[in-house]
Length: 109
Length: 112
Image 1 (cartoon, rainbow over the protein chains, first blue to last red):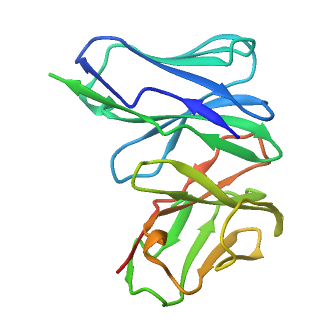
Image 2: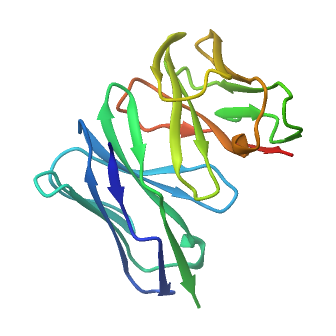
Image 3: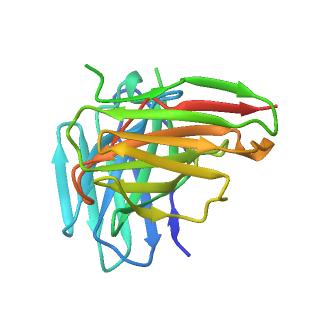
């Protein structure tokens, strides 16, 4: 089976930093995606990591360790609009994408 | 100029009925997908088509039948709807298999 684990909920204050962890055990691994999903909306792409290390994209960064089966998404300078679910998804190859259950981040003023 | 569109956005129907959801993408992508997101927010792949050919068919009841008339369209037909089919169904597309996927707005299906 495919195991992708991430915390269910996280709460942080506006302007703070939050780190969302994702651990995975899957049959096949090409890379790892992070998607953002606001309530009632479609998921939108944030990042894709193939190689180990940190990739930074504005206020958002994503890290991958293939040997540890571990990734995290780092959100800096949190804004109210960052309140959303963040989905970790493993690209298993052959077009298959397995999603975690998502982490709901609530940003408080 | 919506990239991935789905119709309808909401669908309320009774058990036993047959319904269809349509999806279209104008991104020129080769691959299209259907996902089901249940009440616990798990997003699970159901089907994938590449250039009109079925390439992924996960463990889905055969009451669900996808059809791709051309590479810009992927429709989902559901026969004999059951209560457990209530969920949000997302269509998505990508250029190849390892590119980011673009999701449609979702169809919220409620079976009563």
